[in-house]
Length: 171
Image 1 (cartoon, rainbow, N blue to C red):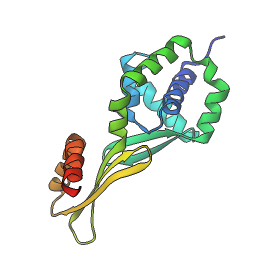
Image 2: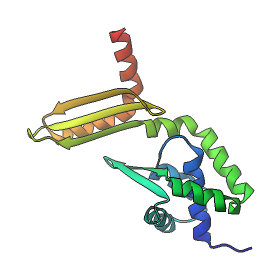
Image 3: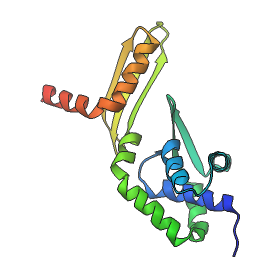
Image 4: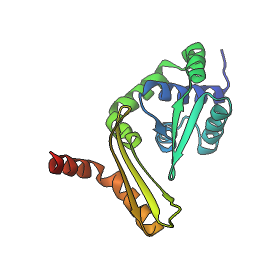
């Protein structure tokens, strides 16, 4: 039975999101699909857009990162049509998710955002999660947008070191 390639790509994205217990970023999804050369960037953009329009996936954006999760409707769709994904592709996805699990999870569980407060200062919000539990949630006020951006970037690179420091100093 022949199937529309877009349908296959949509099922791949749904399968990936269903397989993990955390949200995946667009770059994580595209990294896998483009690396394996299943499709190109433009087609993947269309696939993601179609899945969002059909409310099969949900997107949340923080700073310049978009995080995707599968909806209940997406899970139902996958349960009906998931068998259309070939065993080789499922094996590729499972291998990718297994090998990159910690890296993917860390990227998805560390978030940083900033916004301009009514006072004119910039508020940064730094969060580290483990599953659905917030391990640390830090808010800082800084005078400039550049400082807020730098703090957010540093949080992605140094969150483990900062968390360890806090734990050592507080206990």
